[in-house]
Image: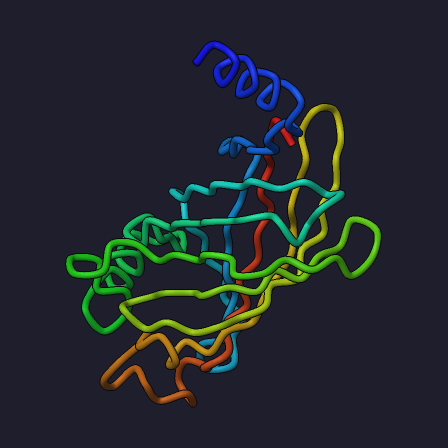
Amino acid sequence: MTKLFSALLLAAALAPAAHAATLVADKSELAFGFKQMGVPLEGRFKKFDAQLDFDPKKPETGKIAFTVDLGSVSLGDPSYDKELAGAPWFDTKRNGKASFVSTAIKATGPGKYDVAGKLTIKGAVRDIVVPITLTPAGGVSTAAGAVGIKRLDYKIGEGDWADTSIVANDVTVKFKLAFSGL
């Protein structure tokens, strides 16, 4: 038994260190852009979280899980924010969170990665690929990028709001996520 315990301790000591990272929320941003009646608008989410286990030397072994509190959406006007929380849009009473869970990570160049995964909003699940640039600086690594989605694929803006001549179907999600411990 002592030999087994010693072998396990030795294996643990020699194993590569985990590359789990912690989100630095006050240095991170999650925003989105779209057009309403041809006019560009931007919004953001104030509350989100990410779990990252990543080794830049072995990106294919990495895992990313990201959740967004849909009730934290803001277009900068409380009346618009209340509207977005309603059933036609995010329906936050029944669908409080959106999530992204990676299924594969592939290096595409120095500090650049394509992260494939499943995006879930309002119960609708779609496969997407998110291009990310990872930049280390001063003990913090920043993952930044943007990805386009179709809002109607996720039932965002149902009923009268499904008319894409009023609110465009194309939405660009932009992010800058700072991590320590990477």
